Length: 386
Image 1 (cartoon, rainbow, N blue to C red):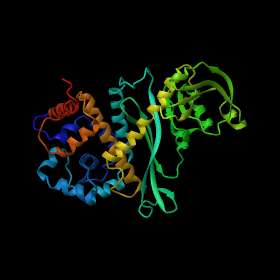
Image 2 (tube, helix red, strand yellow):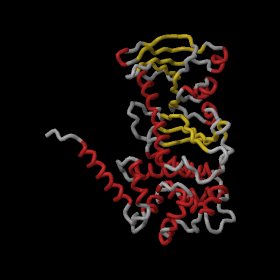
Image 3 (tube, helix red, strand yellow):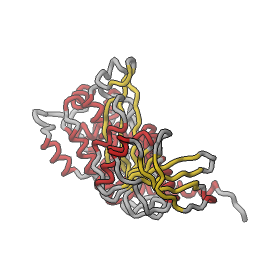
Image 4 (tube, rainbow, N blue to C red):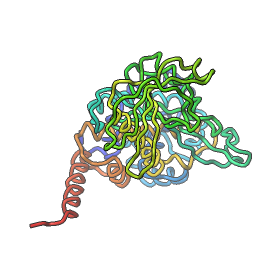
């Protein structure tokens, strides 16, 4: 794979470029394009994500500083701010959305046997959203408040490998619960979400699809107890009940029984969980909700390590293009990590790749050497007891 290739080019060999070409043809992305193709656009934007570029001027300056190596990066067109800006504004963002979906399918297969830390074979998803603040005068389409604009990333995260399987980009005014209308529940899978998604009419769709949800009850939750299951209070469990809704509309929207679990955590907080799964141990339900925190860590990670807080264009198409290329880079690095059998964290891999894109060194050797150094550094931090 190495044979004198640049590190950036070796990384991109793991992407399904035949799929990318098919998508460009499907959406006519290169129609009437002479010099700067969709592939050139993707490679420049992926380079910006990996090397922490902050603007189109940064991208242009860095790539033009290495003119002899652009061909070996795969870039055939003339790199300029205007060409990249025009491409981000005009090339259909769905090309990069569907390409990211192709990468996600590959990554999910690779991480399908990843451990969750609990005894559960089914797929577990965490659903949440994060808001990215924008300037209203520049992003007038992304309405949020009277003096503020924002976009929301509504994300469904597969907790085996922290792979985002669904991302909906909306303006800041879209309420989280509306995203449930866009999901097609997977039979047998678990969906973990906070109480902002409690809408019994929408949650009933999960029941009808033979999938399961775990969420927290709102403070005004009205119910009638049907029966109580025995619990071990030494574990933090307070009660495990089978209940039914008593409100006129809520009962009509969700006519089946629910399971209500009260739990006191290590900090003394009392949490009330709702689920439609009746057989799992109550502590497993509590642990499933604790795993929801991974989606919060995912949002924090991508905001710190990818370029999605500052956009290179102001149109809706440019913003969606940049987000989906960022997701593609994240998933591609996750694929490389699994296929090369590396123990490195994604953060460490991105740090290494950010300073070595133009190096002619084996990608595998580069990352394995870093993994050895990281392991030795961790061992050196441990106390010597002998």
